[in-house]
Picture 1 (cartoon, rainbow, N blue to C red):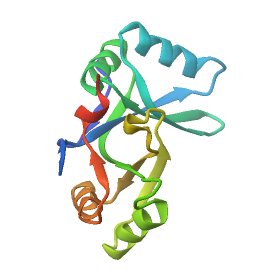
Picture 2 (picture 1 turned 180 degrees about the horizontal axis):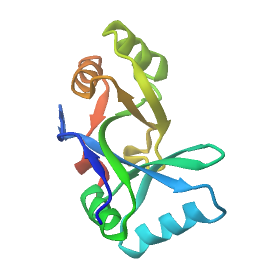
Picture 3 (picture 1 turned 60 degrees about the vertical axis):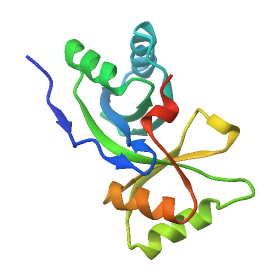
Picture 4 (picture 1 turned 180 degrees about the vertical axis):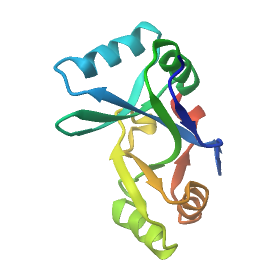
Length: 158
């Protein structure tokens, strides 16, 4: 039996296709995250961003991956339930606009941030922030217009 997969249509950012995040629910057992990461590595899929929320029964793992399509197919093949959603990844500058300006631009547009986390990779060596807003298209456009570099999947995938 195939696992349920919820997918939103890929969105376009000013730079190209939006970055997709895959979310996986793991049983709250010692070593379950390591097993997931090893499975991805065995299939040459790199973890570029990671966020975890732990409860007593389950752990929600949000992943930004080098090959979200391949990971989605792998999860279906292995019976790992997951969801897929577009996120915004924005580069925060050391001398340019930073976190406060990013949040201010989204506030001005009256966009809610549902969750955010930093990424593990840093193309250009600038900090990267993954954001999920109630409207990813508008969020990406607002941040781009505010002078931020909004990354696409092609900027992260190798």
